[in-house]
Structure formats: C-alpha cells, structure tokens
View (cartoon, rainbow, N blue to C red):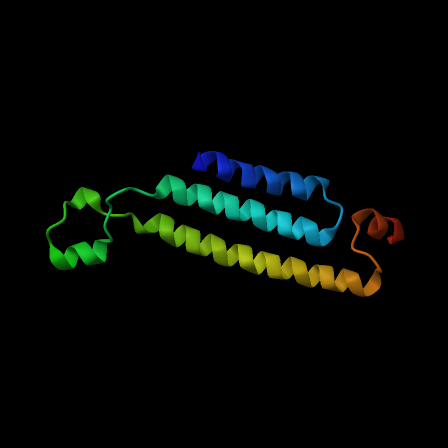
Amino acid sequence: MLEALILASVLFGFFGIIFKKNLMMKIIAMDVMSTGVIAYYVLIASKDGAFTPILSQLTGDVDPIAYADPVPQAVILTAIVIGFSIQALMLVGVMKLAQDNPTLETHAIEKNYTP
C-alpha cells in the first residue's frame, strides 16, 4: 500500500512536469516527484529491528547483523540538500523571467522569445 502511494506521488510529479504550463507549477511538480523518489529510497533501505552502529557499539549486546547501514541515510540527506538547492536555483530563474514577462505560462514566454 505504501509503495503504491509513493509510486502515485512520483507519477503525479512526472505528469505535472510534462502537462502543466505554468513554470511555478512545474517546479512544485518536480519537488513532489523528488519527494516520492526519496521516500521510495527510504522505504527500500529501511529494516525492522536495526540499530545504529554507534549505540550498539556502546552497549555491546547487539548482533552485528542488526546494524543499520548509514550509507543510505547519507545519500538521502545529500539528495535532500541537492534538491533544495536546485529548487532555489529554478525559483531564481523564474523570478528573472517574471521581470521580463507578464506571465509564467510557457507558451506565452516562448511566443515572446526572439532569438
């Protein structure tokens, strides 16, 4: 059930990027899709009953197989930071476009563009 919800959020974001004409809506759709991908990665990397390696080394009574892998956690944190910075960069680009155009609709921007 959770996998279906995550897949739905990825698909909603993907189709939002393709079919929405407003640039702000495209940015929001990209953020929804990114959140779905991160949630899917967290779902795959999670294990029931796993302990953090630092806590279990202090107590010493946990089976070494029950350690949680810290690499997926680091990858997810990196993906969140990169996604945030990309979103901020796209918002700056949209702000620059909004200074020259009265609308953020893609067809209107393309019509006003003269090479």
